[in-house]
Amino acid sequence: MFYLLFYLFSLFILKGYNVEHYNNTGRSTYGIVFAHPLQLVKLERHGWLALIDSTHKTNKYDCRLFTLYIRDTYGCWDVGAHFFVSKEDSDTVADALKIIRRFGRHWNPWYILADQSHVGANSIGKAFSGLRDGEQECAVIFCTVHVMRVWMSKIYETKAWSLMIQAMHKTTKVSCEELIKQAIRVCQVPGIKNYITRNYLKNSHQWALWARQHSPLLLQITTTNPLESYHSELKRTTSSKHDIIGIIQEIWGLNFYFLILFNNFYVKKIFVM
Image 1 (spheres, one colour):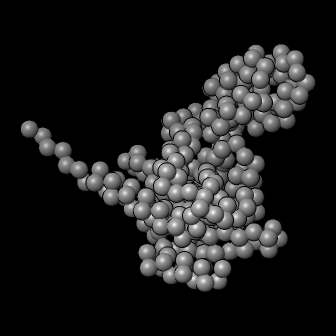
Image 2 (tube, one colour):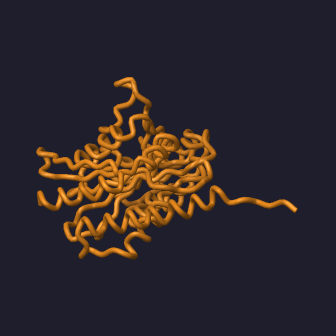
Image 3 (tube, rainbow, N blue to C red):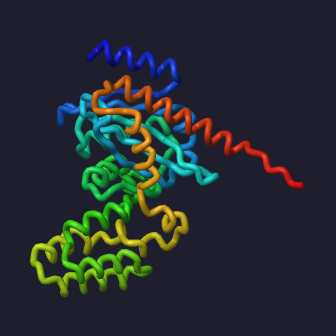
């Protein structure tokens, strides 16, 4: 493992990347964080809203690949940073986010859009302490597509599910919470009642659109689909038989492709007759 890490770090240094390997002794887990300086510049400049998601089956060690994704001034999506973790728990992911903050010292996100997982929300809360430490408060908002996918399996009573969908798209907090309570009242299954009460009554600011009415961009970007598309493109050329070096080389290739593609878009000239 030592020689693998030495060779891996040598490759990163040749490519000009910031890279760090860390161990979480309390969890017996480890991770590798890497980001190019140009990516960090974009993360600091445009990362007030960042998407975060993980993907699996990209390497034979079963390490999860996490990516931070940001949208620039031109409306183009780009990578802010990557990290691998040996186990997807909140402490290990939080350690990686803290390292990324150290790489990009001026990155102060206002919102991080994630799937509906306690790991993601808890890790972000640990990495961004907010006002209690005199920092910018970072809100975790959930991908609406992931939320509705969960509802399809968990809230299988039609009336309750329909009311929850309506609640998600309400523009005021009062009307949203009224529909949630109505869904709880009309539901005939005690387990679903408890599920809605426990998971959605007190945190509608994370999944409902009333909390995003102040920002047209937040209303436009409600899902992690752009990042999932990036991961799908990456997994098209990788497999669970790759080692870490193999998958990282594929990441470099894909990031370089998008860099050239977007740079050509930026400098494209428009001729007026």
